[in-house]
Amino acid sequence: MEQLTVQALYNLDETIAKDIFEGVTYPWEVLPKISSFIVELGNSLPEEEYEKVWENVWVAKSAKVAPTAFIGGPAIIGKDAEVRHCAYIRGNAIVGEGAVVGNSTELKNVILFNKVQVPHYNYVGDSILGYKAHMGAGSITSNVKSDKTLTTVKTPEGAIETGLKKFGAMLGDEVEVGCGSVLNPGTVVGKKTNIYPLSMVREFVPANSIYKKRGEVAEKY
Image (cartoon, rainbow, N blue to C red):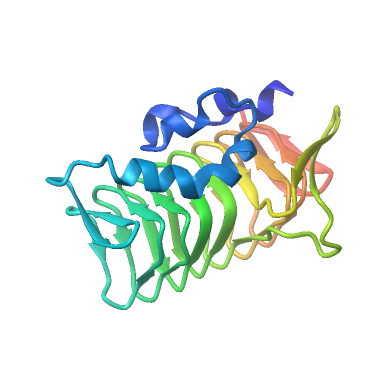
């Protein structure tokens, strides 16, 4: 389905991880590759711009990292990014340029494109967030199904098998997720779509839409 492809969801010029998507159709295909990609990319970063703070963790010299934040490797924190008080980056994380990882936010196996904001009490795991995507306070990705079976992506044209047990959400560029929402395993949201606060999403939501609740999705004008 064309709307779920990397090309439809993301501007690859807005991430340092552009090369990981080479030859890939759907964005979730890169999730198992993030760890090794970070190590390879990190070792190639210019020393005048990035500091290797400990094993497999590179932080841009222009980034702001609170002393109470934890960053586990492998990880790359991009230029002018902000990692705030008590953020918990468990590893396998790329935080884009100018991105914000906020108070008590937890990241694990993710790519955050440039200018992404996950600023207040968010959990983002096994997910990719496009340029300027924003998750409201308390909104999270749920990345494992309760029955522990492999994740599928539900679309109007049928389910797409991913072969992945852990799969959070793929958010296109400039997606806005309302406060307190839960993005269930296999969620894919097209560019510039808004998710109402307190929503529970477990499917594909088209670009340029307003998701009010399941079965009630309006097109933006």
